[in-house]
Image (tube, rainbow, N blue to C red):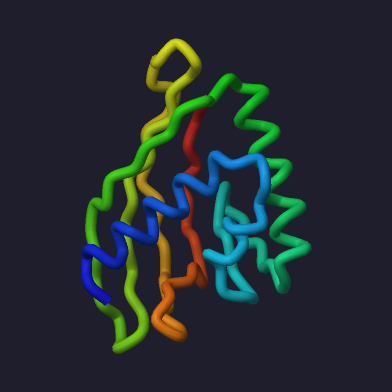
Length: 128
């Protein structure tokens, strides 16, 4: 895994997060996947469970008028041959281009069959 591979992965992840369908986005995850947020950890054992959560999250974002989001890779650490930890800064903007939230999330990625997958996400308790 190199930084360009990670950037390509997050380009795809970010783009697919904006899509109405979660089909391709779900392929970015390795199951089970753990997502930590607001002091709680949730483990999604399969794509059906995660799909439900992603659909609900996208609905919340739309209701808050969060229409544009961008990312920047803040840091990268190789943990093992096929594992890395990536810090990603996210910026969320409303339909008028105003920044509504800016936060740093941490992703534990694994490389399987020459593809990256998210094993765990640790999100801050961001305020919108």
